[in-house]
Length: 174
Image 1 (cartoon, rainbow, N blue to C red):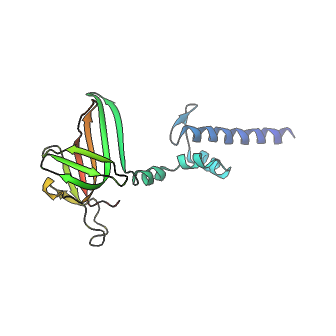
Image 2: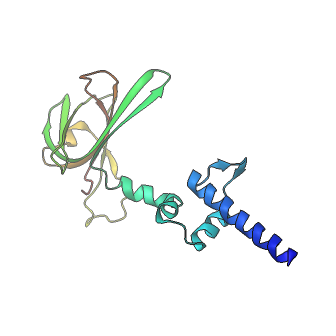
Image 3: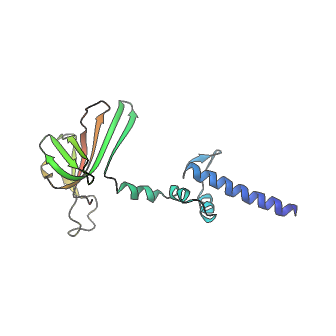
């Protein structure tokens, strides 16, 4: 009987430890030890809640990011606070110095354009080249009203600062 209790306690400790590791997140360190794949598998087999299973799947985040309409992220760096703005939508206005994009939820974002700071990528139509990858380099003159685009811009963290587009990808799916 003593052996059965020791084995059951050891098994429970492994499951509880694995559960705490998943709650902390995949790849993180708990109690000085990295989370192992075996621990994650044990938690999944034990019927962990769906949120723990989702946290163990990095593909979930990739899938989520593909559905982003617009976002703003603030970071602290060596040069101070920087704000990154991203939007996916249709070009509603374009000039040599600015670009306005309208997302599916009618949110609008204007970006400053710079021939030295803004990179443009052109993705071909899916039917013409299904395995085209990242597309080909483009120029600011390749951006037209009505084009479906993804734009990532950067600005200083101050009121009224207009972000400068860092990259514009033309031909993205909504």
